[in-house]
Length: 140
Picture 1 (cartoon, rainbow, N blue to C red):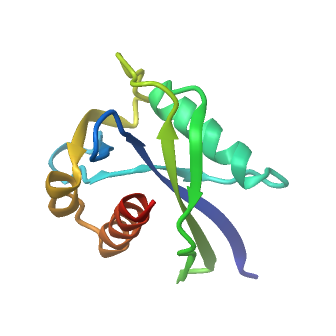
Picture 2 (cartoon, one colour; picture 1 turned 180 degrees about the vertical axis):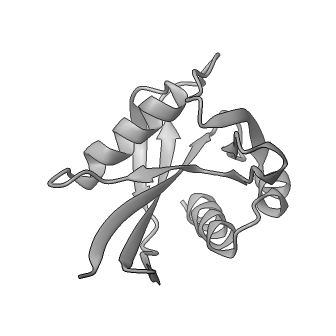
């Protein structure tokens, strides 16, 4: 029997000037830790908006979004007997966070411009998502 798992990836950003800065988190897996966005699972019966806010709060301590942007890029893959569907969103931080409270799953964080963030992301899906978010923000 196959199990269906829904996950989210959330690209947190702040925009004080003309260009946004993106929050990147590095996994606490030693030298194998990758840089990426906030990510986690969606609980059974949980609404996407609630899962987004919960994951961002749990992983970073950032409370409320000023805006949440659906990147319209769901992806699906099979991993053994699991079918995974991943939903990708942008999350504009309501205020510039002065200090983050990182979940122990992460070793460090940094705010980066698009030019610095894009090549830091090692997964193709993450690069495609930040490119789409950046394009949407520039078009607005």
